[in-house]
Amino acid sequence: MNLETIEYETRDGVAHVRFARQGAANTVNPQFSRDLRDVMLEIEWDQQVKAVSVTAEGKVFHAGGDLKEFHEAGAGLPKLASGMLTDFHGGIYKMNRMPKPFVAGVNGAAGGAGLSIVSAFDLVVAGESSQFTMAYTKAGVTPDGTSTYFVARHIGVRRMLDLTLTNRVLSAHEAEAWGLVNRVVPDDEVDAATAEIAQSLADGPSWALGHAKQIVYAGFNSTLEQAGEVEGVMIAEAMGTHDGQEGIAAFVEKRAPNFIGE
Image 1 (spheres, rainbow, N blue to C red):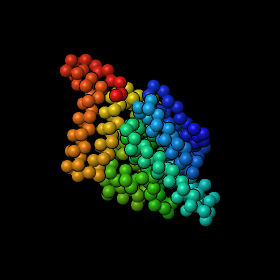
Image 2: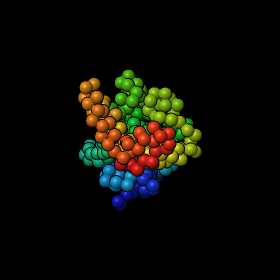
Image 3: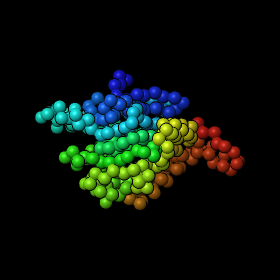
Image 4: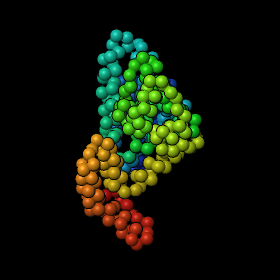
C-alpha cells in the first residue's frame, strides 16, 4: 500500500492503524479517504489479522473534514465531497461488515467525521481529557460518516438530535455515560490500553468473536424471529469449530482454553 495519511503495520495477529495527518488534525480529505479504504481492504483480506487497533498521532484524534481544503475547492466542492465520501463511507462499510473486531483509542478531540468514525468502531477507549462533538451544523452542513446510523443507535434519537442541532461538546466521562465510548483511561495510557484489548481479542476465539460481532449488528435490523434464527444457526456452527469444542472442554475440565482462531 502507498499510504500518505495513515500508518499501518501488523504484529501477532493485530493490525495497528494510526491516523497520521497530525499537521492537519487528522482530518478527512480525499487522500485520507482513499487510504482508509485501502487499509480496510488490506485488513479484510489478510487472514493473519484477527483484531485491529486504531489510534492517532498528535493531540487531536480526528477533527472531521478538512475545511481549509474544502474551501479551496470552491465551486468544485460538491463533486470533491461526493467522491471523498464514496471512499470514506466504503471504508467504514468494510470495517463494520468484516468479522474482525476494531478497537479505537481516542486522545484529544473527535469532531464531525471524527465522531462519526469513532461511533463506527466496535470498542472505544477514550483518554480522560478527550472531547466529542458533531459540529456539522456549526459549519452549515449536515452529518456524514455514517453518524446517523451509528450514533443514533448508541445513544438514542433525542440525544443524537441534541448533539446534531446544538453542537454540544461531551467530555470523555459524559460520552461513556451516554454509550459512545466503552471505557475512559488516563491520557497517557490510551495507546497501550487500546493495543492490549486488541491483542487479547486476537489471542481469543477469533471465529466466535468475529461472528458474534456480525450477528449483534445484524440484530439491529432484524425481527425477533430473524435474530433468533441467525443465533441458532451461528452457535451451532460455532460448536463445530475447534475453538467452540475446546472452550467447552476447558470449562468442564476447569483449565485455560487453547484457542487457535478456528
